[in-house]
Length: 192
Image (cartoon, rainbow, N blue to C red; front, side, top):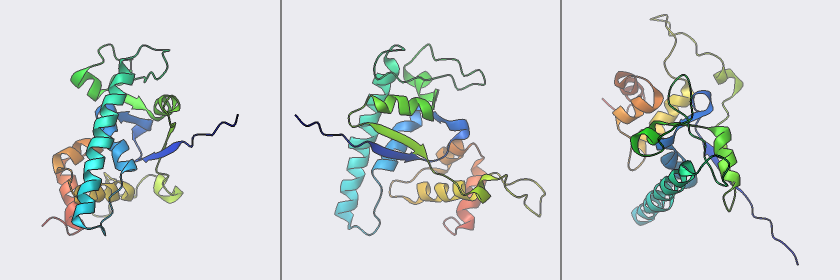
């Protein structure tokens, strides 16, 4: 009897601070990676893709991740979540806003992904070495830039897609002020 190997699904996430992702953001990040937009498609195809993103992506992973976080350590499919604090202690209460604010490391996502069928393999966008270095200071102020070019590109992508992210949500996600997000959008000619 021949067994067929199930190919893993590779999910590439945007880089995160220290490899930690906010639990509440993960369903959308995973869906964004799996259900890419195709701007050349007609309106009907774009709407279908958006529905797949929302239902097959965000809602499905919201349920799956919450179920995995609710398991006890050592159970198959368990997802480790820690406090969003310097101590990074394991979460005691694993529901609601407390869970959504918790942090999940990329390595823990991969451990959880191994238990899925088909397996999920998570990785991050690899920045070129020149961008990985500390950003150059802004000449007119002498202070380092708040965002890298890769982060600015990600902000533009998230803001410009069909359902778009609000400036407030982007500021929170990238840990910068709303004015910084507005400057990025203005420099790209998107916002006046």
